Length: 252
Image (tube, rainbow, N blue to C red; front, side):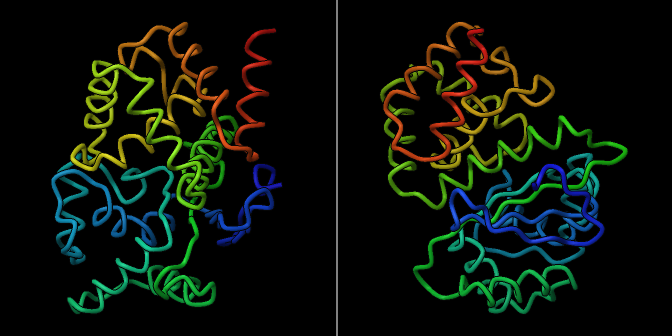
């Protein structure tokens, strides 16, 4: 239903297979960026403070320094409830003026009850299909972001991913993953971010425009081996069924 939707305005979904995941379906990349780019700069972009919320001018300069625009800084976003609460609390303490879309996000989080301590939830986003986003790209992005949503909202799954990262990948493979993510300006000092992105890219991103095994110096056969091993130990959840289906289709 989400994939088939053509957003004329921001549309909010609660994901049926895991109701702790909220999906924001944006009518444009610009609206998505206006709402979430400042959050990204605080939570996970490399070279930026994990404590200081950027002003409008600083955020604009940062985006330009990376050769990006409001639209291209991120194509999809994913955050746990606690990180979003941290962002808004920090912005309030530092008297950072939020834009209209960020204020709209704050109102949504208040409605969900996510600004209170200890809340479990994950917010992800996808943009509408358009000039730069095809239907297949949107599908790949949604599946990738939903994998992050499961990680942020299911402690058993997050713990499993961490264990797999430490015990099933070699040190060389972990280093290659870090290099790949660092090339896209992810904060490679954030170890949790590294293994969260590992599972989303290696296990659940199948569109070659977004990820290839060669991006992490890996053969397709080694990736398939790791996917099969990953599947065997996964906690029971909708994501396990999705990976099993992918591996069956890949084998046909």
